[in-house]
Length: 534
Image 1 (cartoon, rainbow, N blue to C red):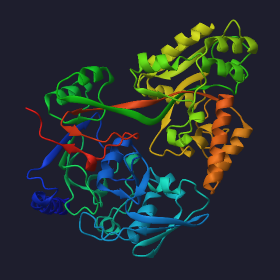
Image 2: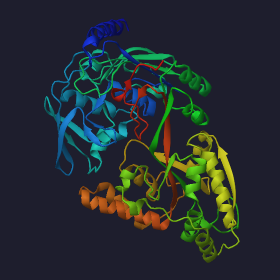
Image 3: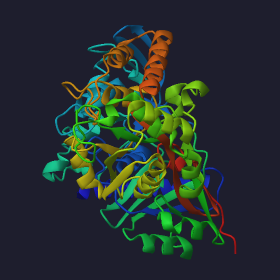
Image 4: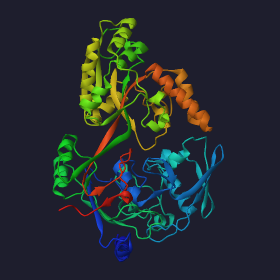
């Protein structure tokens, strides 16, 4: 502990000496920001949670990272090539130093991947997916994969690189066991290659960072110091932003958005999140768990599923309920990149109440039926209100829908047991490839997590075979054809009813410029803080 404090003092002194030379600014620009929670740990493998990843991602770096549009770009690796179906060769960036001055080499890459595979690591699935790393020379690493992985590079973009020498010197070669409340050295200290250096850490109180004066890469913004403060209370966060106590809030309260947008000196930055909101339907049982008629399950009939889809006035939901903060879609993937921005795949079935009634009549449900719609009330934007709106719209078909809205802990537990007839759900994350949702949601339920999130328990052997083939197809063109085939099959069979990709709002002082990314990631090196207007 004393050794690290001395190191921090040395780093801070060196940084202070370099401030006058950095970016041509005569005084330090400070970013003060907040959200409800605190980073769970500084060990980059111990937890896979958005805020924790965002903070660690300013200290540590990846071999391959994402740009402002979420496209994969070089970071600690400068180039790569696939030398065989299950083999990749990566060239590493020369001249990179860790914050303590150690040189970055292939040994650090091999060490990091092996450390990330440990049982206590929460990113072990990604580390295992990229195979076995082998040092070729100081700046070359070869990865040998256990099987073809079409999204190898996307998996690499989730794996932070640590210093082997630093970890060994500080007895931090083992990933923190967060579940057992282990307090390891790496959980409170850090040493990456990234643009910001940890200065001080007071969990659940305040964490301070300074710009890395020896950073190898480009820093577009002017931030020299970052102070993060967790503020649990929504009202207090809003008040802190309005008063100028903080410059930026990652998670403003939805009910405060209109007020903040109209407040002088403040602004709302919003955009689509890489997350699809949709309805799942029980297609496995012969009789619905809830509702009527007894002895039947209307959702097993594709005409019924299509009728529910076409009875949704998605534009009304977008404009009246979401205040325009949603992107309706017909493609069951978290990002339009997953559908290759193909307008034919993104197109929704038209809102057509007459057509929906005709379909129900053909299916034998002209008088409608009853069912319960399970819904979280604290997970997605306007989740309970969306369910209430859908129930109202479906009532025009003669359907009697009971909305069962619960806190997410109860809701997730309920549908995990398949204890549901219909449910609202969301799926997303940093990976834009459709594989992120295909194996978990599109496959028939099976072993090793296959179809785990197919909570409607539908069985579609044709879809299952196409998705399985896309997951292991190395040829990009053939795989794209398989993906499109899978999305078309999903749309035809309406195993899920897609609604929209939700937007995520951020709130900031008007003198703060940030880049809003679809994975809800705040990149500090892109932030500019100008003098506040007087």
